[in-house]
Length: 313
Image 1: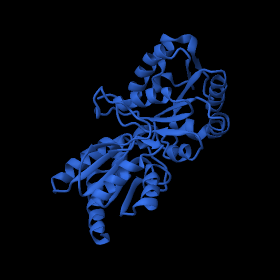
Image 2: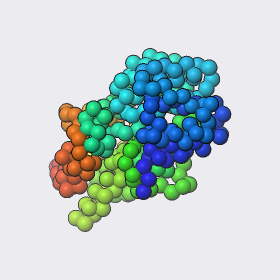
Image 3: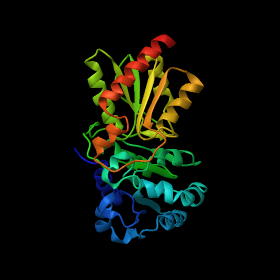
């Protein structure tokens, strides 16, 4: 069990050796975003801008304009919300080579409550031209997403989880931008997930298997660009799709899935995200249960969707 943010910090410190132009920016959250290891190892390539995320993004754009590769790190609610204008105008407009590493997204932030639980960041970031959006699901894919972003020129938004999670990929895994990964094959329903909900989707699949329901689970860790091919192949096999994400049901992974299916292969779809409401303070599991992500509730949703699919077909 390891938190993706820990894997990000470790990978960043290692990649600093391979990328002499790598420069890390932090908005006074080094202990939380785990960039401290890089700061100790490469103090000359690290800058704490203080609690002024808008300025941090503008500084990152300036560094990129001079040929450096800035990684700007803060919480998702500040990276996508407070600094939206600077990300759009100063970074994405000119396709500057800035990697935005946003930790602490979604309800999984827990007790910090609504003001820190960003449920809109994927929707905001995927709407910006030139900006690619990644949402890895475990320690290995998080390190892989960072490596892939550094290999590819241009701006990225990487959504990095806070909570400890089981390892879903082995150490040979090679993260590919624009690709989704089938973690479990099935025939009755496609479950598309990202981030922390990928592991939850696998637990759900195990639970439904006891009722002889076969779930195909897809890790959609590349939100933009999105892997339409893998989703459509799966939907043609199963006949119905449910998306699960620790994010608003508006504008996130569910919207990617809906757009893909509507344009290419319409089938019954259920988007499971938070409804039109803010988060709340509490422990992670209590919040997930309160917001409709309890395994029992998800299982009932799957059963209803499969029945709908049979009528649809």
